[in-house]
Length: 144
Picture 1 (cartoon, rainbow, N blue to C red):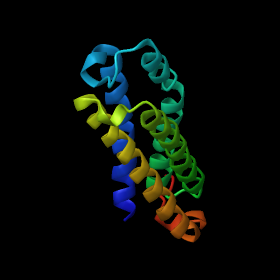
Picture 2 (tube, one colour):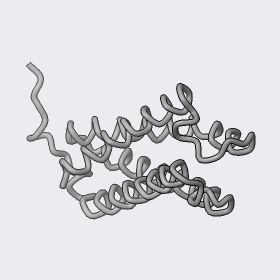
Picture 3 (cartoon, rainbow, N blue to C red):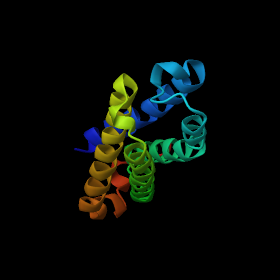
Picture 4 (cartoon, helix red, strand yellow):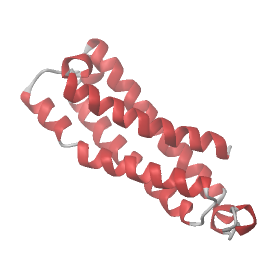
């Protein structure tokens, strides 16, 4: 399951990069609405998504290195994802985004993936906290 978590973290990083690349390169390809308020809402997310990406990257690196700090970064990544899920889901429900054709369906997938990712990472992290927080120095490469 550790490998699955690493794949999820990598996927989150890639999805973050792809989403924002598309948003700035061809907004119409992924926008669910074409209103100023929708654009303003989406434009408020890059900093939060960057934080999510950073926490995912650090969690991935520390998990691979078997460092106890992986626990911290996994909790940060999962909670950042849950927060973003909450913001996105509530806005989408209040504004009927999920019923807006292909863009709405795409948004529903993003929201569902964010929730699934966050809950999976947090659940796995909590269940493996003892292993994550132990000093796994026998699994670390030694310095020459």
